[in-house]
Amino acid sequence: MDNKVNTGNQELDDKICEWMSWNRNEKFRNEATTLIEEGNVKILEKLFLKRLSFGTAGIRGRMGPGYAQMNDLVIIQTSQGLLKWIQGKTDHDSHPKVIIGYDGRHNSLRFAQLVASVFLNGGCKVWLFSKTVPTPFVSFGTALLGDLGIMITASHNPKEDNGYKVYWKQGVQINSPFDKEIEKCIQECLLPLNKSWDISTSQNYRECLLDPLKEVQEAYHSKLWDGPFDPDSSIEITYTAMHGVGYPYIVGAFEYAKLKPVIPVEEQILPDPEFPTVKFPNPEEGKSCLNLSIETANRHGSNIILANDPDADRLAVAEKSVDGHWKILNGNEIGALLGWWCFTVEKLRLGKDFDPSKLYFLSSAVSSKILKTMSQAEGFNFEETLTGFKWLGKRSLDLSKENESNKVLFAFEEAIGFMCGDVVLDKDGISAAVCIAKLATWLKKQGLTLQDQLKIIYDTYGKHLTNNSYLICEDPAVIRNIFHRLNHFTGSPKTYPESILNGKYTLKDIRDLVLGYDTTRKQHDYKPNLPLSSSSPMITFTFTNGLVATLRASGTEPKLKYYTELCAHPDEKDVAALLNTQTEMIEAIMKEFLQPEQNGLKYRNC
Image 1 (cartoon, rainbow, N blue to C red):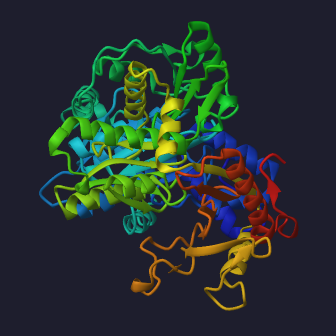
Image 2: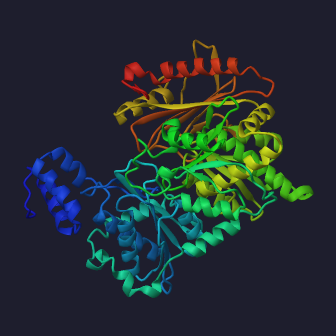
Image 3: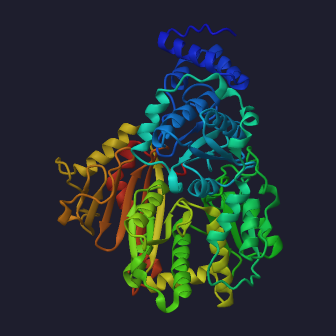
């Protein structure tokens, strides 16, 4: 097919012809040709008149033709812009050092090779992993070796997707204003250079292209596993890589940590871009993703299941109860266990020299408040950040810069993301798996299970009952109207509901990250200590009985999410009564605050 196109929209025709003339991938060209022949102008406008914009998470989207999807041309354009940006951040007489990794998805290796070609031709020193690696290895490797890290992954997204994730020095995710600077550089570097397409470039730059795998893995192990652990482990643990990259790295980490080898879910241990045994390759989905793991565990008499997502930066945990029922721990429960364990290990390690005043624990604003409650009882510091490890990692780095004696022991978000220690300043499913295995081993010697310890934690610090879900809303305008109504409740800005159920449950505090208002910060003119979140509106309501409810619009999906937690006093032991109260309040919040019927919202299971 020639490059003549006639859709009736001259701007669209020009953009299609431009993309077709620049693209050199035959598969994506054929897909574009099919779309053009089908003549669906709306789809063509979406794919060619819009483009994937670079944000703090890099870029991520469906693979296919056009500027709004992931393909060779978009990868090259993004890399050329990123090259220009990093060159502007580096001394003129030095060469930027770049580390590149990739997962097992379709096109990930080729995309990584194209990235390497761009940076090699730009005079950079490049480390390209020789095989698929976990995302945390790129974060860690960037801090160890480079100025910039790039991971080709779409994490737990559907198989049709891929992504381009960027790390800055010290291995933290790119944050504002760097994302806007990079996007500007990309727009200035859209013309693909001929040499950018040549993935054989590596043969001409052998002295500048290295494989970091051995060095990164050895350093990763040596910096993570110090501690007062008894190496004797007899626990049988079942592990699934969810058709991702995690298995060989779990094997290596467990061996180094002197843990018993895991029992693998054979059908899921190798990277497979089709994810053939799961509907969604996301262990956060729960039992639907863990059926094969449960079958494997039952066959081998294993009572614990650990599951990574495909790029191994998240961790799911399940434990078999005495009655044979499998309990799948949610992210907040795993966070409570790991937070308590990290604190306990540090206390055991330091003995009489233990001083909690310089220890920090972090969680995202929509995660459980259990670490906050623990901090009040144990004397360590606790802080919240916005959702995402770009914020948790950055805050961890900032704390270490503020005072070198500050130490972040643990950070987590409820979406099964955990950072054990401050060696990897991002969520890390490999180190979290080892920590859970160590904890389970230690507990077994006390005659306890993970669920037993979780009960002890909640008996000690008070029940923290979470209930998180979402409603589906396809219209962004509806979401904007919902939040506008909530923070203009009496018609004026910064006015909010005062209660639910006709005054049965009253509000104590409100934190509004849309308008920038926090009733707990009177001494700071009510300005929140968290950045505003205009792209993902978020308001947190705290009730006098301890219920905390956060309403947040997803920035990437048509979802209006709610996160609720009833934080009870340790003396409140009647879990059934607490659950009834929580359910009653959630139903009222849905009906009175979100108004699903009036706003056309769909419930999760609809």
